[in-house]
Length: 566
Image (cartoon, rainbow, N blue to C red; front, side):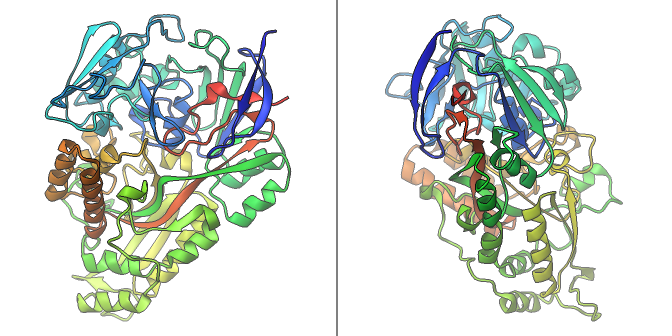
């Protein structure tokens, strides 16, 4: 067996070890546990992190972001820029040059036709693509030859790295998905559960909301990788069990998103089998505020559109009072410790786009009550619940099942009760809540509640595409197979216009200023209530080498480089 030696550094969560790395498949099995179980392996049909990250082991983008948030080539030779001629001088197109010789896991050539097909697949009007904002402003994709992809934009686009960049915008094989375009997309179970890819692993079996078994891609572009012959991806359970399985029992090699109290993490680490990894990106735990009426007596179209506005959550007095009543420093203390920070912003990172407009590091129950009193929202019948225009301020408050989130729910329910708002608590299995099943009433996209709490993030350090999640036309609804990024269904034409300005702005300082202003419009306008800027906390087995925590892309971005420390 041919061996090679490599030194792995501990940068942003990497494991320090000088180790001998075996050739492809000689390190046996590696096991990963995500307590939010994947429900599909097609990120175009799900916005859930669990689905985009698990699929990243198989399907890949043209370029992605490294652990420092820098864009790097992946299936291409170089990153296009104006300087190297890859971006047109008038900023209306970007040209990607695919690395010659790449093949899919089935041995067929990877070509520009697959890239163009991916664009057509996601932008089909009936597809309900969950990643449509990645292609915002694209007018066409041309393929002059099998290695060249030209993305054309409707107008000058200073940041053209949305399409085909990062974990949310990978390439799918045209031959495999040819009959899965438009309304048929969610019906193609075989393709959605077992995509053919260019990544280091191939899917052997996928059991939704349970386990994925994978094996090394025999046609992976580096003949020495991956070191592991097989990969077991277990989903489900809870964060506590996942953390213990790596750091205490050694049953698994990698555990994702350990949303646990700091003392619990410390106790687990004392087990001696694993090490926690942490890093801060743009991940924010927040409460989304439904702009439409979730009354189950209404039909699905009405509940998903402005045909029936929410009876009180669009009132600034209400959502600002709800925010004032929350003790964010206490939430950070009990939920995250050093892995959390108080934030009033939707976009807290990178630092250049972190707005200083709002202050929310102090709970103000009296101020919240005064705000509601001044708006005439009072408890007229003495039952402890205020009314607005005769409608009691009663909310269904839902989130995914998780110990920290349930602690947050209980505290926030109590604080809201002190200002005359009654909250009914509901938690949903995370695999269902973050799943993309258009038939389920319990997904976060359908948002059949008044408020809901969760966190998500975006690839890279430029928030343009992520800020596009609040554009008016990105709301999930029946016509989009319940896919779409505007979960609150918040709509402000002025926000849309300012975002369009961002897409035309080249200067970095001006882009940061516009990004901050968009953030402020979303918070001031009541799209959400930010709570905690969360550090990403995961864990690796002490015997697992090559892991570099990446908070700007998929955590599994360099799984091809993982190996067993001997």
